[in-house]
Image (cartoon, rainbow, N blue to C red; front, top):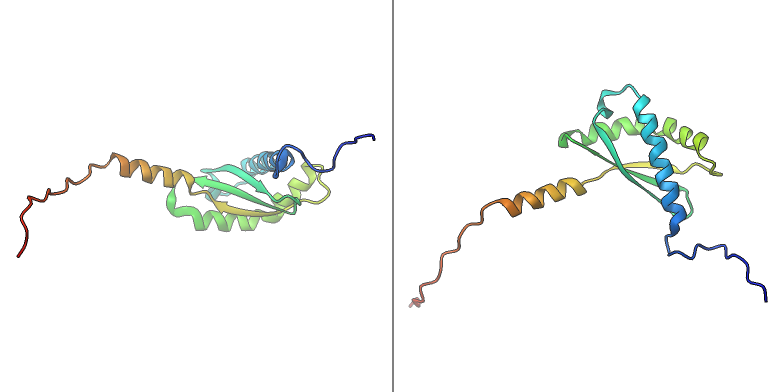
Length: 134
């Protein structure tokens, strides 16, 4: 019996196709952001893209240096969502450009907070001198 190539990716449940498509979308969106003249998006960095297995939806993760700007940045991305999706459809050879969803990546902030807590001096607990009440 002749064994042909399977339609499913054998490298894992998520496969490398979604990772490649995610990286391609990240590059397209990043290059388009460089051309956008919106000061809300000046210090934004794209940290990654998660793509569904069926390639219908892509979550684009972003981070910024200013912690208070996330709602304004999300608003700017909402305004550009159609343009960015159009560019993804032009610059990639996908049958259908995925819906783009933009979310703030809080991983770096959480890591900074953990580092801050680890560096902070801990209060010394008072030792019990062994006396019983009563």
